[in-house]
Amino acid sequence: MFLISQPLDLSALIKTFKLTFLFLFIVFLFPLCINAQVVINEVYPNSEWVELYKTQSGEVSLDGCILYFHNPDANIQKKTFSADDKFLENEFFKKVDSGGSYINDDSDTISLKCLWGEDRIGYGDQGTINSPKDNQSIGRNPDGIGNFYILDNPTAGSANSSPVTPTPTASPTQTPSPTPSSTPTSTPTPTKTPSPTPTPAKKSPTPTPQVVDDNSKNTDETILGLREELKTPTPIPEGEKQSRRNVPIIAAVFILAGAGFMIAAFYPFIKKHWDGYNSRRAQKKNIPHIG
Image (tube, rainbow, N blue to C red; front, top):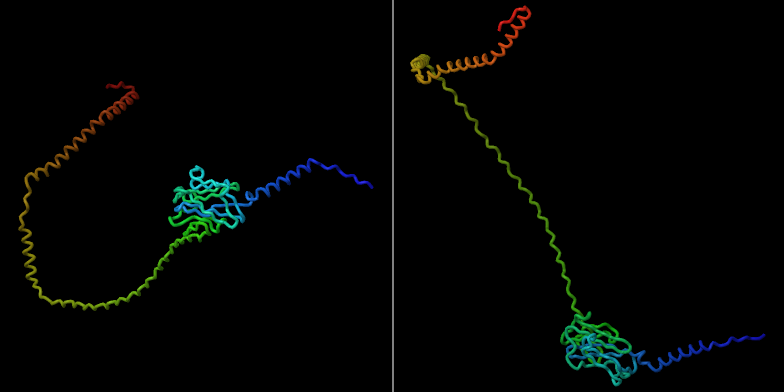
C-alpha cells in the first residue's frame, strides 16, 4: 500500500508564523503597557495636590502620562511625566503637587491620561461628588478601585481614611391626632310637676227680694210718654226743602226729554213703513195713492 502526502501550503504557514511572532513581540517587549495601570486615588484642593495609585504589582513607568489639574478639556494646567517618573516595585502611592493655585475648591475636574487610558474625577458642579470643605479631601474607598467619597482626613502617600458618614436626616414623626373622647350625655333631672292649687268656688250671692212699687213704675212710664210727646220737632232748612221739591221735577224733565228723543228717532222708520203699507193697500184697491 502506498501513502500519498499532500503538498504543504507555504502561504498559510508563513501567515501563521507572522501572527505568532507579532504576539510574542508585544508580550515580551511591552509588558508594562499592557498590565500596568495607574489611577487617581485622592485629591486635596486646599493643599493643591493629587495622589496617584498603582493598581498592579511591579515597577510601572509614567512616561508619556499627563496629569491635568484643572479643566482638562481646556488644557489649562498640566504635568507631563518623563521616563524618570515611575512607581517602584513596592511603591503604590505617589503624591503630585500642582505647583500653584490651580485646583478649585468648589468645583473642578482632574484627569490622568496615559497609554492605557484615561481616569477622571469631577466634583461640585462638574461631577457627582459634593465640594469638600477646607480640611477635607476626595478619595477612593477602597484604594484604587472604589468610588470617590468625601474624606475628613487627607492621607497623601498612604491608604485613604474612611469616608464621611452623612448624618441621616430625621424623618418628621407624625404626631397622632388625639381621639376626641365622647362627652357623656347628662341624664335630665325630672321636673316636679306642681300640684294644682284648688280654686275656691265662688258663692253666688243670694238675691235679696225687693218690694217693687207698681205705682212708682206706672208713674215713670207716664212721665216718659209725656216727655216724648212734648219733644219739639227738628226744623228742616228751607234750602233742603226746596231741593227735595226740585228732585221730582228734574226727574220728570229727564224722562220727558228721553221720550221725545226716542219718538224723534223712531218717527222716520215708522213713517216709512206706514207709507209703504198705504202704498201696497192702494195698489190692491187700484186707488191712486196720494202722497
